[in-house]
Structures are given as C-alpha cells and as structure tokens.
Image 1 (cartoon, rainbow, N blue to C red):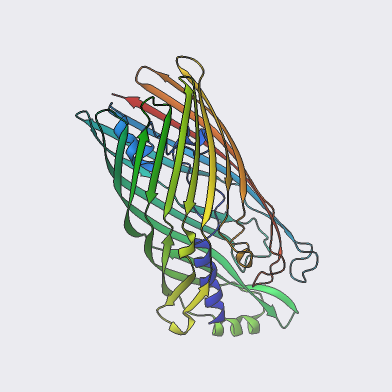
Image 2: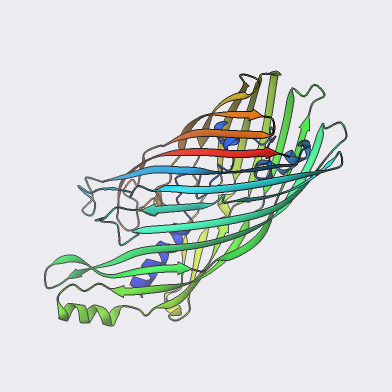
Amino acid sequence: MRFLRLTATAMMTCVLATSAFGSGFLIPEQGAKASAMAGAFAATADDPSAIFYNPAGIAQQREIAALAGTTLINFTNEFVGDPNSPVTSGVEAKYNRHTFNIPNMYAIYPIGQNLTVGVGVFAAFGLRTDWADPFPGRYISKDADLKTTSVQPTIAWQTSDGRFAVGGGVEYRRARVILNANQMRLNPFTGRITDVANTRLVSEYGSDIGFNAGILFKTASDRWRFGLAYRSAMDIDLEGDAEITQIPTGNAEFDFAVSRQLPPDQPINTTLPFPEIVSLAAAFSPNENWDFEIDIIRTGWDRFKALDVEFETTPAASFTREQNWEDSSSYRLGVNHNATEHWDVRFGFVYDENPQPVEAVSPLLPDSDRLGGSIGAGFHAGPFIIDGSLLVLHFKDRDTQGRNPEQFDGLYQTDALLWSVNLGYKF
C-alpha cells in the first residue's frame, strides 16, 4: 500500500505541477508575434492568434486569414543536493535534453462589416520532466509527460466605428498523462538501497468544455487600446492503469519477499484541475511606427488546494494530499516597431510568479519565479505573413530549504529557450 500510494502521489502531483514554460503547467506561447512581445498581446490581438489571447480581436480583422506554426522549447534543469542532507549530499542531476513541439493553428472568416468567426487549435497546458539516469530521485519520478489539446470555435462582433469589440468561444480540451517511476528498498542481504520495481502509469484521454471571452476598446484616435480576456477553469477526469513491473535484484529470497508485497496492476482515477486566467492589457501607439503594450495576467491556481486519488482494486490506498497552491501573476511588456514597409521588429520582457509553496518543491515540482526577454521579427508582403521569435526564460534558483516531504532536499536551477514561428495567409 505504501508503495502504491507513493507512486500514485508522484504521478498525480507531477500532472498538476511543474512546467518549464509558464507558471504551474501553463504554456502561453501560442503565437509567434505575441511571443516576440513576451506575450503582451491581449490589447493588440491583430492576427488570428487573438482566438487564444483575446477573442474579441478577430472582429477587427476584416479578411479571411489562416495562421499556423509551432513553438519549439528547449530547457535545462539541474539539481544540486543539500550538503547537509543525509539523502542528497553530493548529488548532482540533470534533465535529459529534449525539444518539445507545441503546435498551433488558427483560421478566421469575416461576415459582413461587424462579425467574424474563427477556430483555433492549440496546446496551452503541458509538461515534461525527464531525469537522466542514474537519478537518485527516481523513486519520486523518472519521467512524466502531460499533453493537452484544445479546439476553440470563436465568434466576435465590433461596432461599426471599430472602437468596441466583444468575442468569445467554447473550448474543448483533452488531456492525458504518463509517468514512470521506480520503487527502492533496503536490501537486508547487502545493506544497500536497491531498485525493486518500476511503475508506469498511463491515463486515457479525458476532456472537459470551458470558454474564453474578451473585449477590446479603442480611443477615437486609435492611439490607446484596452483589452480584457477571461479563460474559464476546467476539471478533467482522468482514468488510467498502473503497470507495476518487478526489477530482479539477483537475490531470490529478497525478490520473493518483494513480490509478495507489490500491489497488483490496477485502475486509478483522479480529477485534473485547470485554472481560470484573466488578462488585463493596455496598448499605446505614439505614432504609426511604434506600439507598446503591457499585460497583467492573473492565473487562478488557488483552486488546487488538495489532490484526491482513488484506487479501484485496493481502495485502502486512496488518499488526499494537500497542495495549497496560490494565485499567481505575470507581468508582460511588449514592443512592436514597423521598421520598413514589409518588416516589423519586436521585443519584450516578462516576470512570471510561480504558484507553488516551498514544501512542494521536489523532482516533480521544481517550479520558481522567472524572468524573461524576447525578440522577434515579422515579414508581411501581399497576402503572406511570416513571424518568428525567441523567448529566453531564466528561473530563479529554488531551494527546498530542508522542507521536502521525501527529504530530497537541494537546489534547482532551470533555464529555457522558446523558439516560435508562424506562417500566415490572407485570402
């Protein structure tokens, strides 16, 4: 029971936790132009990715258009053990290197002079934590993978003078998770800690339906623009299977004792809470060549107070684990400069708070506040649009301060590079 409880806790906590891309497991980089402006886009919202950032923005776009692209993410995470810890003193570990592909696609279709409809496909939440072998914390997590996909049909309307717009969409979101972790025990015959089993937890896809809504307001001169966007919270029920495989140690007597204690493969289920997101933005254009925007984004992680996990075969292993996350804020500044007739140059800055209390920091949860800078460019000629960007994120060093429940204490250091590109066409 203790083995199964520990393993399932690891899986579900990882599902609900760390990402190297945004607070919690949010990935807000869903358009190259917006990413070049560090995500400060809810008051500009002037390309089809407005479906994600502020759906009211598609009302001001009066041409049929399609936009598709991806964000490629590379990140590094290093762990240095606490020199005063009997468990992690002298331990150093790193993530395996991966390049993560986060695609997005949008299409819009204006109707008359005031109405626009569209649809977006994106993956705004996700994570991957994959520690390189041999990892001393593999009893907490070796590898975890959360994937989501959202489809959002959207409609927006603007006044005839174009000064006010409102829009919204229904979001259908799917999610699934895979976790791989080991169980380690003291071998009484050798006096050493030994790997005795591997647990692979695989969920099927679960889904839920939410919504995204927004408004835009422009002054008569069009120099000032204001945006407000809201994405609803969701709860996705996940059902999965635990596959538990014994790892032979070479000692038949010890292996037999372990086999008697390992739980059977069995179904497991829980509910994955996704936060609500509120974006408040203001943009200013002093002239036709410069645009400045600042966004404040509030993410409602405080609804994640506890994790309830249910086991179907051995209900005695079911448990509730306190999490006590807090709401977090992100502050984003973006600049767009119309350098030539066909070229735009962009840059931005971001400060992103993490929602995670220090007690939860572990190999599953190395989240921290982060600082970032972005740069990018856009090319537009006739119906063609090409946007590209680079966002560099530095995570503040996060120390467990000797408060990790599994006594896996130490310092986590994380950095990330996010490359985004989008190709667009106006019909």
